[in-house]
Length: 265
Image 1 (cartoon, one colour):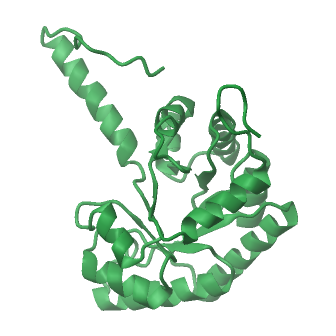
Image 2 (cartoon, one colour):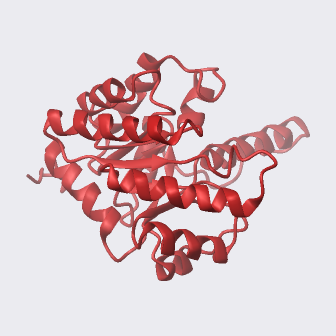
Image 3 (cartoon, one colour):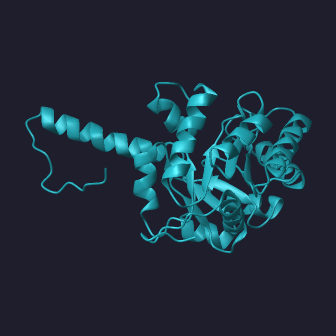
């Protein structure tokens, strides 16, 4: 349904189906991560925005918590506020599931999310597969198509093991998560095109999700390689805070406000 202002009030099921479609479409899905209502509205106002993703690290920082330590009720409250403020599907960063991934996803769906990242934190593979299956089952029970972006920390938590072993582990975990019902597999890491290509070859075309970091190819090349999704994590908030930090330093040094200030809030 379209409102007089031209925005679309889609149902949860419609948003969920659209988010699932965006992950499997030939075009790369770019999601610029947000952390509160005003950042969500700024990003959603761009006509290129087809979906949003929350950044758990950024939301936690906004409330004064370290990454992964924010109480779940605060995280879900902000996710709900973001989902209610925009007309595009919202995928939520739910850390490792906060002790009960299936219940956390059920509650996230209840506040409007239609997708989520869940970290495996390199738990034993059989335990991680069980988590994916439980999340998929919980979403099915809620009756909302759900885009599970199952994250493996095969590179982030690799320690000193050989890189080749981490790559093999990421592929093995990714295949297992897809088989268990995940929409795609999130493999964060600062690696180059050869690794991206190997992940896509091993896990599947339009089945791999990455995070935009300096070593990764540009979005256009990621699309050519068959990547499903790229997100940007806490870097979006860091850029915003960097601008605030620079302005503060300039004002304290005797500067003045910029002549042009966009009214984005």
